Image 1 (cartoon, rainbow, N blue to C red):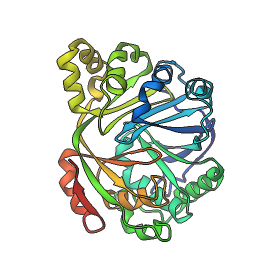
Image 2: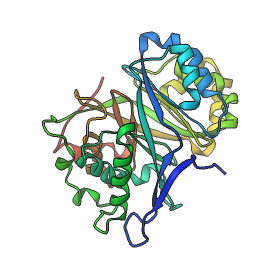
Image 3: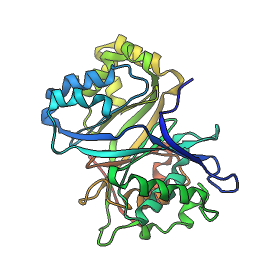
Length: 334
């Protein structure tokens, strides 16, 4: 069984609330975020390999490659490794990781999207910027380290509140406009062209998939999205479906190894919507404003320092666009 991340504090929600199956965990150490432009990817190959295959079940490591570059997230156990490869970067940003644990066995990470949108809106009302990472099983909110206590208190109050909206109807209880910071413009939403596949691996399977992972991240890096998120023994992988096809054409055994490791967890036909916000990915309210209209749909989120991506199932994309169109300029990317 996969273990949960180490925690500092836990406060379960009272059974009388709509969020009665949720609890908030605080990860054991701070999380550092560093961004590397695409032109410098070759310079961090050692850090990628060390992070992916370190086999530290109680640690956190994530790498997300988007159009602009690569965003690393890692806890203090990887700091020395990254400093040795990248130097003590002055542009590093430090976060506290809040794990939103869903106690119900009937809902997965993508199926509590409305709940998370409502929680993000509560943080936005407190002018707290947030990044969000969703895996198949889990949901994480990253808040600036110096805002951690205030964010935790806000989430506890939201979960415990009798008036908190249900996950299926949260948009009617939380006003998206109130989640915006003053003077923030309307983000533009761009539907990215590639189909996205998502799967879950165990850490013991990483070495059997080593070539496939390095292919996706380094040898043939995706144009729009590939992400690997490791925490608590779970490895969540998102990648462009065409990349797997290309891998299968050139290195079929490598593709077979990845598919075998993914097994039944492989979930195809997701589509990514990029949120274009000049003020930055962590702008207070940006995630909640986009996700609240989608509260009735399974949604996954991926945040980097400069990009937010919202993922919808292919069959739900048209309906999702209908829900978003009254509020945003939604267009298709090339």
